[in-house]
Picture (cartoon, rainbow, N blue to C red):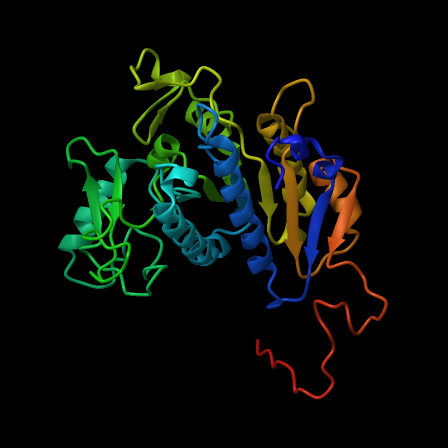
Length: 347
């Protein structure tokens, strides 16, 4: 690891790395491992700064909300593991928890705490199981226990809530409300995401259309001026008094992961490409040498990847991982098994 931070200006940051591998080959696990490394490194480096390495460090984006909700479970399990590591070594990793935030449309999750408060009451009072939970995950991402009506609580009070506490129903779980007063490190309400600023945000590409309409979204990119406890406050909060002033704000996200790259094509690709210009500008750290965010993409099927990446991200350099090997049947990371029956897909 580079303790001086010189490595953050490496020319490879301009190169878009494309994880190109068949379905089921471990693309998600590959970039989740990279995300874990990024989050830990940011905390290690930030402990000597006023911001302590807090704020959103990673943006993971999908094109479909169904995919986003499906992958949230894996991301949440990773964050739970990192949070366990942090609890064991708070001197090196800080006193603020690792958390993941879901940032998608209103049809999937509530945008405000008032909305989710009503949904929690309806969910608890429902006599039928047809009314689903407002929380997007049916099971605890750490132990697998089923989450029920007692898992969601508005806190610290119902009249003045600052967030939703999601506790596992298994009291033996490390993230049950009895063992962990903060519960599961998963945020799913926009209002809470803006205030707590989870280190890892899982979103859909269409959600970024909110950037020019909602000023609070600037906080996701480090535009804050102060902090009280685990709550951050931005320019729109005016003269809000804070316990710790952050005149330089927080560092912006430094890693962007775009999954299912092949789906961003046609008119959708044109619109996403327009927003990418603004997103890269918001994620670029100013200084004597501006530091761009690192971009990782993943797909199982794509054509003319370099051309698509150039049009989408405006970056000319693309590196495919794993790189082509000497033999088509053996790339070191994967080999052709001519004896196994393989998979059967039914549609």
